[in-house]
Length: 277
Image (cartoon, rainbow, N blue to C red; front, side, top):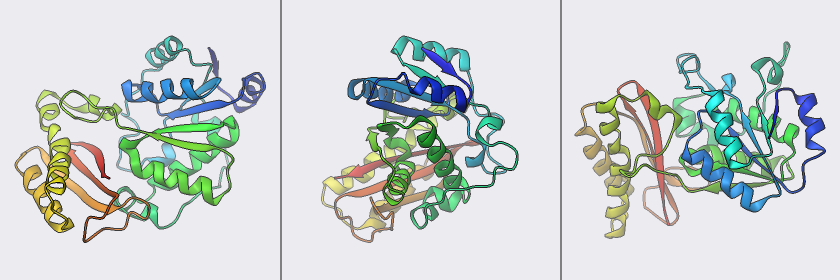
């Protein structure tokens, strides 16, 4: 497994990779959700590249950049076991050198849901992902459904800018009690971890009501709110019932519909979603 820290060195290694090449972009602190993406990439491609880069551009001023969990030694050990061909681990200075001043921005769909709560977030995501696509030149890139808006935004960027690759989104990997795997779950203490189950429970409540015939989005929304408010450690950032392409809120649930939410459990902000289809 090649471990590459600079763009110049990666481009040399890239010449030796057998096509097609799959890319799994990550911020490290890898978990089974990342592994599911890597395993699918190995099935689909002759070579697999994983990037590990905690991207400062996608963190807001009051967010958790400095304390975001990191464990490079463990990450590289896991990737070695999975048979990854190359790992790109650039520094911040390598990705954003002095006088770096370019941005990639997708309008409209980035201004809703996560974008409404984190105004600079998606500009940072699209900029770094566009750079990674240019550096690594993958045939396919893999993302998880837990960050569904991110995947939708990246698909839009790829289509609009005629980027020559395929975006593949895979289902969310969950704990036995339904909690979506996330690096930020490591912030939760035992009591908060138990409380965090309410995210998945509320999504399953919305799905159950829909399966029973409820089509009014406001009703689904309100029932989710009622359930989450029963958990004293939970504070709702947003609940959305929206079109899966435009992310515009729906009044009536028509298929497919994205039900998503962001909830703070103590000081930790968690997101999750289900697609009704």
